[in-house]
Image 1 (cartoon, rainbow, N blue to C red):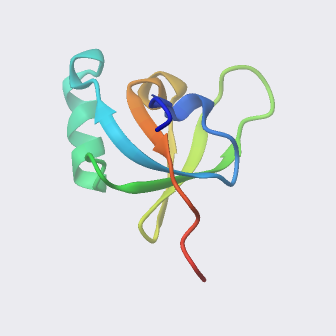
Image 2: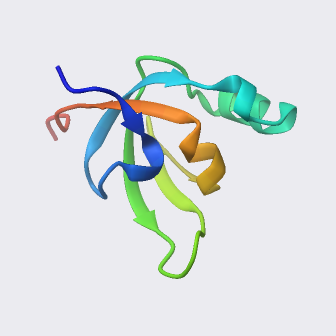
Length: 87
């Protein structure tokens, strides 16, 4: 089994399963926002886009939503590789 790695490094268009979230690395409002968006262990996530320049945000799909995450927030989310769901 592959070791979990940061959502920040998940390749574009590849699915991952949230393995863990380091809540201690996040400020209270950021952690609350993630929970409200449905980020939790076992959730499927896909990186859709990355900012071209610098350390800009990452667009992710979680469930049927597309959300933008700052890289520091994505860095607190550990994912394991997953197979893409059937369309």
